[in-house]
Every structure is written in C-alpha cells, then in structure tokens.
Length: 289
Image 1 (spheres, rainbow, N blue to C red):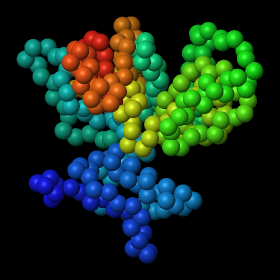
Image 2 (image 1 turned 180 degrees about the vertical axis):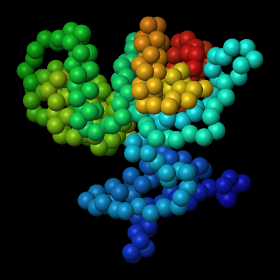
Image 3 (image 1 turned 120 degrees about the horizontal axis):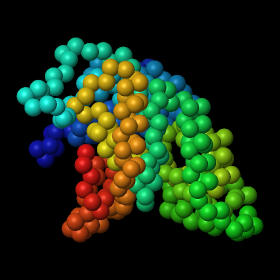
C-alpha cells in the first residue's frame, strides 16, 4: 500500500536464472495490462520463444486473439414484453469466439466491419486491401508529381515519433492516413509496402495507447448494441448481429472529433460535446449505447 492506495506488483522472471526481465506496479490488473507487460518483457529478447508459466487467475486465461466476442451471455438491458423478464441460462459453453475487423472514418462517422473466426495475416491483409481499395476509388486522384516532391508530405507525419517507419525513396502522392494498433500483423513488410504504393501512410498507436485510436469507441458502441442483454450460441449469430448493427449505424452515422489532451477534453466538455468510451473521441450529439 502506498499513500492508502493498493498496488499490484507484476513481474516477469526467467525461471532458470531468476533474472527479472520486466516489472511494473499497477493499481489494477486486467487482461490488457498483463498483455502489455508480457509484450514489453518479450521485446527485451525478441529472438526467443518463451514458455510462460503463470497463476491460474482469470486475467491470465485468454483466448487466441485479443478481446474476442465469445458465445456466452452478455450483461445488459434488452427490450422484452411487459412482465416477461429475459433470463439467461445458468450453464453454457464458451465453445466459439469471433473477432470483428473494423475500419472507421471519424469525419463522416461511417464504419466498415467484418466478423471473422480467425485473424491470420492472410485474412486481415486481404480484407484491408479490399476495403481500402474501395475507399480510395471514391476519392479524387491527386495531380501526379515527381516522387521526390511527394516525400515531404509523408515525412511531416513522422515528426516527434520515437520509432519511425522507413519510407521508400519513391513515393506516390499521399492520399490517406491509416491509424492502427501496434500489432505485428499490421507491420509486415509486404503489407506496409502495399500501403505505400497506394498512397496510404500507416501510423501506429504506442503500447498502452489504444485510446488514441477512435475505432476503439465505435467498437464499444457496436458491441453494446449487438450483444448486451443477449446470449449468442454460435459464431454465426454474433456475425449476423454485428452486420445488422453496422448497417443500422451507417444509415445515420455520428461523426467523431478528437478530444485532444486532458485539459482540452475538459474545455470541450464545457462546450456541450459528448464524451465517448474507449478512446479520446467526442461527438456533437448524444449516441445511444
């Protein structure tokens, strides 16, 4: 306890040498916090494939992908006939899971999703290439310039970054900024070079910085509308429900604006903007969850 506050010591030790690879003090221990701590420890020895032994605590019992949606009852309210309360089953099996791939355009509020049962690089990259190509086909093609004249337009987005991605010498006109989580599947050379060739500049959120990506907010909204108060019993049900709420959202989308730093977010709150969970995004009108 420090200043009347309880802290958890989470450390990663080498079982043979008892060397402390990495440690952190946390006020709470969640699945995401543990994932970040383990990732930081693995970055000290990038060429190793360690076997991780842990306590049998719920935070350590994870599914194959980060935060998937499983076939289990979800807490929350739902519309029911009067005097007929929905009761969830006492026994169930988490025998399947679904991950939702998401592309979000904050300025328009439009969102594209695809629910999948596997998120290998082949599935992820093929879907991103398809959807990004569709989006680029609707944008106006910029006037062609010599490749050397395009370089400053790309380079300016790397200012103040601690880790900068290597830009090719030959670059087309910059057409899109794509903000993604800092995951290995988002940074494979083949996929990154494809984005460069299409005029797409990838920007990666830092570790423990997912709140910088406004897609976190739209994912939370769609998840609540699709799953809260329901019990999906198959992956197909989860896929259908997410597809349905995505179509409903796009019929009358709500644009998001960036809330900025904490002081800026508070000043914008005074201007009657509505805060959204999951990231630092705000909206000009209330969004029903």
